[in-house]
Length: 222
Image (cartoon, rainbow, N blue to C red):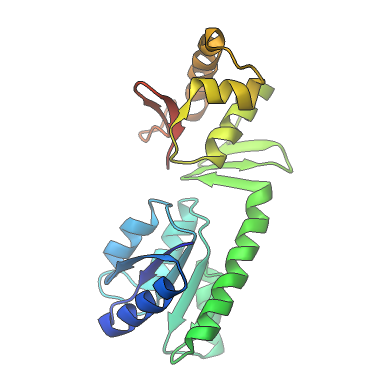
């Protein structure tokens, strides 16, 4: 599991990093809100441990920005304030759980396991890359809230790309997984479908999510 810890108290951040690494997790640290938001927006983490009181941008605003931007990474919010009103503000901002300081590391780990399990259950029905969302139950795709019209094969290809976000996928692999073909001579079918998918997904947006990986194939990244 890859964990982003956003905590301005360097001693607390160091202890969290040490404990999480001992549990065989990969840990990224950010010591202020701006750095934390920048790292979190990349969407490379399985869970975020987010302090409320941070310099530059506080944790509540970070959570709100992430949720508005379509980032669904589970968030465990840390705070020295444990009043009901504070907890409700955290949940309203988009936190999945709330842990008051001081806390035991064992409780933190239990809460992280719980919210990542919930996130995995949601992920089965909904895939999110940046502001692009694929809802498997409704069989709908939206970008920035706008519904996209896709053919069945375009939908299947997009789902495969989103399930492998950030990974370069070869045309041959895409053919095998989406078309059940295994011959390079059909690679132009992939290229043609990608062109149509790009028009549906990226046209009119500054950020292009579907990317060509020269000499390999394609990938999607938020």
